[in-house]
Amino acid sequence: MLIYNTAELDNALIRQEADDAKDAGVIAPETADRIKAAHPYTLYSPNIFVRIGLGLATVLCVLLATGLFFLMMMDGAIRSIEVFFLVWGVLAYGALELWMSGHRHYRSGVDDGLTWVSVVYIAGALVALMESESPLLLYIMLTALAAWYTVRTSDPGIALCGWVCGIMIVVYAAILYIPGARYLLPFLVMGISAGAYMLFSRMQRNFRFRHYDLCLDVLRLATLATLYLAGNYYVVHNAGMELLGMEGEPPLPWLFWTLSIAIPPVYIWLGLRRKDRIPLAMGLILIAVAVFTIRAYHAVMPIETAMVLGGIFLVGVSYFVHRYLKTPKHGFTTAAMHTRGFGAQQLEGLIIAETMQHAPQADESFQFGGGSGGGGGASSEF
Image (cartoon, rainbow, N blue to C red; front, side, top):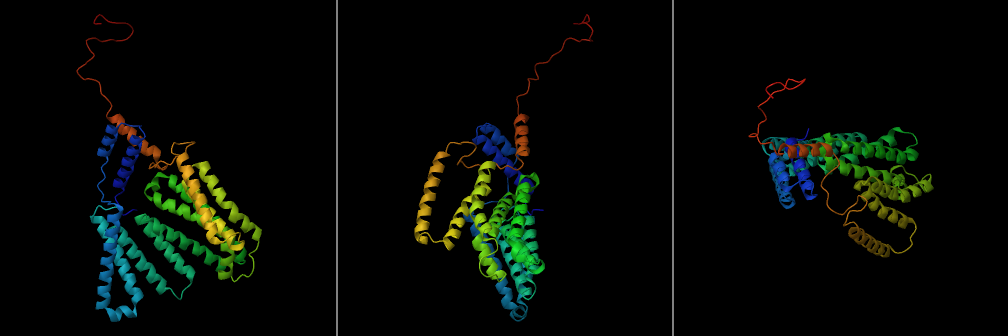
């Protein structure tokens, strides 16, 4: 389903795996070179600066073309400006598909620019066209749009936008169709986030979704964030007042205070236990969110003092941990690891096959012969 050449992307994974194995001393440099020669990667993937430049140039070209046609068709375009941008969004998406069918690019900037211009045009036109419609229908269409772009381009930013729109579907559907939503909504969002996290984690271990690895990383982070925010006291308190018109404390305040403080350490524990950086990173980030939540209702010291002391503490902890893990301990290290968990056995199998393919062969000049045996004892020719 990707618009990119998946065979070339597989070759890139194998080449990275070979480099990791060479750096770890598992295979010889000559073997790694043979593996890379057997799996060439010819897609154009420039460095980040060239990518940004090409992306900005592409966006500028599309904007200039849009502006030119807008001036040429000003009277009609103003009367139906939503349709005008919807058409240009579709045209930009068609240009993306046409460009990728004729060019061997991957994250070159041109594809990024066309992707984001088209999705912004179409999403903006949908928001304007459905201004008077139900927000639920709008978010359904935006989620479907983001899902399609994610499947075709594996863009993690669009995947994140799709998850946010999906959560808004749950919120508005609960408000419109579920009696007593004010009591159930936090737990409903938490349950859906937990289920989505398990689903995305399972997908990430599946070799079929190897080209969506970064998208699934971002989605797992997003699900952990929404799971926490749905149980955070500050968020529940303010969302209840804004969306549901609730006054005073939310129901079961002790439960939301407990979730606000307990979930970040649970994430950190899960990350350490499973050696998974996603819950570990999110747990560390949410520790700061928990501190600010407490600070919002119970001021212990001025916010400036709290931020300075917290920053000094985190810098000290980071420095100590970085030095401690320079040498791997208990499966943890600060060294950069490119090898991912997905499909490791498949990739290792390819490397082993490539290594064994060049194993030394017996000299054909040495031939056995000159005798025969018929079993049950040697004949006179032996």
